[in-house]
Length: 373
Image (tube, rainbow, N blue to C red):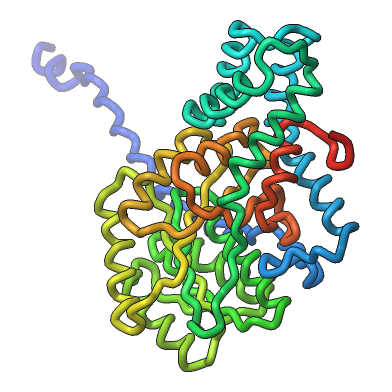
């Protein structure tokens, strides 16, 4: 029995075989990223009739002048509210004594008129009105007169000289100051007067900047000389001047890359661009326009110092006065440099870039109507 028991002993059940491995799911294929959206075109530039030219201010068109004053006054509304509101708070039939003059001086400085200009105005008030009882309206009228007198020497329109054709205009400034839009407006306005304009897309750092200038060129009917992104900007300017001569252009407007005034290597590129242009024309560029954004306030004065040292700036254009409460910086710039202020900008339309009128500007800055003192 032991023997049979050996053969009939119950065998232990074998463990079941492991299940076959599940097939691995294929890794999902990443969808390609969507293509970047195309760059937005620049805002539509409104081309006005030839009467709104920077070459001629159309003195025989009072309706156009009143229309621009309204736009300028509206554009300066923030600056005017800050300045005239402060004057109203200081002067409510009180004596123009030292305390009142000190308050007025502080207000002028805070309105970005600058320390030097403010001191000049206060000294004149002290000499002519000290000890008199005055109202806020009298002070505003007197202040407008003082500011206009300070701005009169720099109110010089920009007129391309036909004997220098192509008249080369180099446009410089920091990032976002409005250089490209200013070039478009100048091209439109001069083109409406029969001048043949050519544009050079000298901002080779940003492809979008080149495309933007091409759009402006199509809208204003001005040919554009452009290179590949990253192209040598001085070399491109040299090529543009040669092309402007070949085509018989009256004006060549050269855009430049926006750069911070404290970046010495980029500022040196501007100096190189001027040297390269002078290899073809020893008098070029005939005008170096510094475009300044009014919203930067006193920083615009520092920008002017630096750009003037590097590029021998010949004139200023102040933009974005319609979005600033710091319009008084125009007075500070005039006092600091005595450079021509060719034009001011208060909007997107071509007519919103106009020759600088010191009387209209001064009255708009202090919130006075054009007709009434």
